Amino acid sequence: MYKIREAIVVEGRYDKAALSSYLDALILVTDGFGLFHDPAKRALLRRLADERGLVVLTDPDGAGFVIRNYIKSAVDPTKIKHAYIPDVPGRERRKKTPSKEGKLGVEGVEPALVLQALRRAGVQLEEEPDGMKSGGMTKADMYALGLSGTPESAKLRLRLLKRLELPERMTPNAMLDVLNALYSRGELAALLTELKAEKEEKP
Image 1: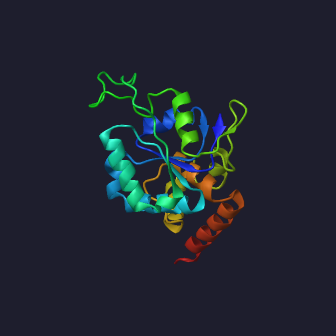
Image 2: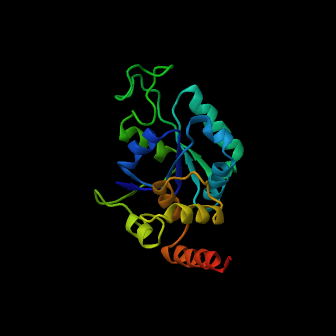
Image 3: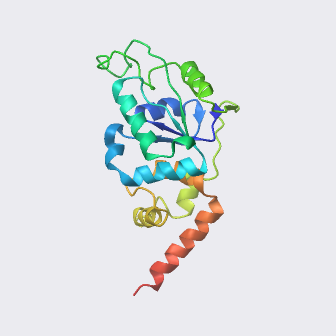
């Protein structure tokens, strides 16, 4: 397992799943071209770029470069590192046919090639013991804070996302990743206490 400070931007959830098996990092997905129509996610990328830096890791095909260039225009380019995986012919195991250009995407290439691409981009990789992954908050903390496991959890998550100016459609797991990257458990507990107090004050 390798730890990376910067947030990594990939195209889809299968890319994220593959990287999560050997990288301890905040990994965000663009949902393909979905980023183009999602101002909240663009704002989140800019925020993370300011606070942690971004690494763009898209597929080596035409669509990947369109997405890469879009991010470059939407986020301060001085706060972005670009990691490029090589052109490797083939198809991903989950697909019946190769992609249009016949190249493997981020999810399909060997981890060694991804790690090499990250190093070439200037990313510092900190090796951790196998199975170890850092992060202040856990799913148990989410439950303890009332953000999961109760009938009111979804409403509380939505109020918190709005207060923090994060995308409202963010899943609980994605929310946990981003909260760990931006806030301490104590900061979140204080904010949630404030949100709950505001609700109680309303008639």
